[in-house]
Structures are given as structure tokens and as C-alpha cells.
Length: 417
Image (cartoon, rainbow, N blue to C red):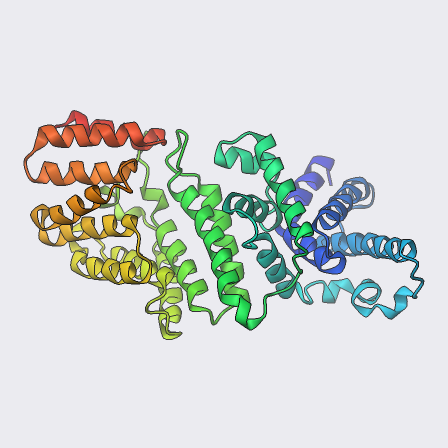
């Protein structure tokens, strides 16, 4: 096999297996920095060994065995430095796991290890931006440069976030474990928040010229599917997965031939991924069966499913969507959710019925610098025949948007007034 082909295969294996490998090493060592370093050492060893001796039958097992042997050496050194001379043969979780046949047992405890790593990377002691960066690095296998490109930030900024996050986890003595039952709900909320943030940034990029960043959506979906596999009876986990599946099903229809934004009501629904919609509907049904009726992610998934059931835009059940947004407001009060309810009311009952809701949001003031508020204002004013005011609202929305594609779409609407 040619060297370039071996490197390509190794790159694929690494992207798929590095989160599992780092998770296992971190569990052994209790140290994220050392886990990442030893995983990288195993990658370098593969680059040196595979071109000469061929790709092993089970590349993942080869990488795991190589990394774990080095981890055991490191543990021996640590014990010696601490003045402890116990034989490593008495450590079944470490030495024994290398002696056994990795071809059969490389998957043992992987689920638990990945779950532990996810809870560590998303620990609430870290700020949200650090949790996102660390999760993309450790759980998604993205390089610092890839994360920086995804968020349009300098590579040094992302590197600093990751370094600070690891230092904080070490200084706080965050245990490499799944939280106990009483501590699980707030910790799980933190994990889900990170996955949700990653998906949303991919689905509607906050900055730059691209309307979407599909790679981030794919990584969030991958995390969501892993999490649902590890926690299959958690309504919030299944609700978030359902929401992402249903939203992602529209991605092919969200841009036109010129790369410009195509809004929901103008999308060619034949381009929606109906198999993915089916997966989202199944996850939503499971979440509802588990009693997730009032969970914020389940409610958002139910709203997305209302859109998914409409084969044509005119068939959308806007009254049902408005009701779901009202329930979501009761569970998770937010001016952004109220803005979405306003849109649904306008679709269901007309602009006149929605106008008082919009006025209340404007008087509240928290969304004054939020582009979608002014876009909705422009839409309602247009429906009310106040075209000059509508044009000004769309222009204001365009001036507030950080996304080039969205800005162009808003200016195009203003130009039609």
C-alpha cells in the first residue's frame, strides 16, 4: 500500500478513534494533558510503523495498545517518583488490559469512558466558550486550527481557551467520572448546552460570509448520537437529538444555487432529508414516551416536527406551533422564544394579532440589538402595508447582522419595499 494511502487511512481512523482513545487514557491517568500527549505519541508511532510493516488488521486496537503501554510506563514512573514500588501486575485496569486480547476487548468500557470525558469537557466550572472548544478538541477530534476556522477566530485564541480549560479542570480537581445521581441534572444540562451551541453555530453561523457551517452540525449530531446511545432513557438527550436531526434535515434546502440564504417558507421541501426527519421523529416519540413533554429540548423538537410534517409550507400548523412556543416560554422564559411565538401568531392569526406581542418585546429592550427582532418587525410592517417603515426595519436588521449571507438577504428585502 502506498504511503499516502496509509496516511489517509490513518487520518480516518484517528478522527474516528481519538476521542475513545483519549477518554480511555484520561480515565487511566486522570490527566487530560498526558492523555492527549500519549494519544499523539501513538499516532506518531503509527506513522513510523505502518508504512514499513503494513496497516494492522485492527488499527484502533493497535493505537489503543500502543498508547496504553506508554500510559502504564508513565504510571510506573509516577509511582516510582512518589516512592511507591507496588508491582503493576496488581493493577488489573491498567496492565491487565494491555495483556489481554485487544482485538476482542478494545471496546470494553468505551461507553463509560466517553461519557466521563464528555462530562469533564463540559464541566460547569468552565466558561461556555472554553467548554465548546475543549469538547470539539477532545470529543470530536478537531485540531485547534479546525476549531479556529469554524468560529472565525485566531488559532492562538482557541489554543489559549483549551490550555486555560485544562488548567482550570486540574486546579479544581475535577474528577474523571460520571456525576452521582443528585449532581447529574445540572451537569447534564451543561453537556447538552455545549452540544446545542455547537449545532446552532453550524446551522446559522453568527459571523462570516457563510450562511451555515455544516461540519459543526455534523460534529454536534455525532455527539448527540453518542450521548443518546450512552443515555438512552434520558428525555432531554433524546429531545436534543430529535431537534438536531429535524433541523439538519433541511440543510440542503437552506441555500440557493448562488449560496444565498433560503428561508424556511421558501424552501424546496423535496430537498429535505426525509430519512433524517424519520430519525428525528423516532427520537422525539421516545422522548415523549419518557415523560419529556415539558422539557425545553423536547418542546423545540416538537416545533421542528410540526414543520417537518408539512410537505408544503401552506400546510404548516402555525396554531400548534404558537401553542408549543407558549409552553416553551413557561418552561424557559426568554425574549427570543417570545419573538418566535410572535412569528407563529402572525402566521396563524395575522400581523394585527401579533403586533402587540412585538411592541411588548420592543418596550422590553433586551432584543434591541438583535437582528431577527428588526427582521420580524419589517415582516409585520410589510404585511400591515407600512412599506417605508418595513424598509427601515430590514435595513436596521441588516446593519446588526454579523453574517454576510443573512445581511444580503435582509438588504434584498429592504430593496423590494
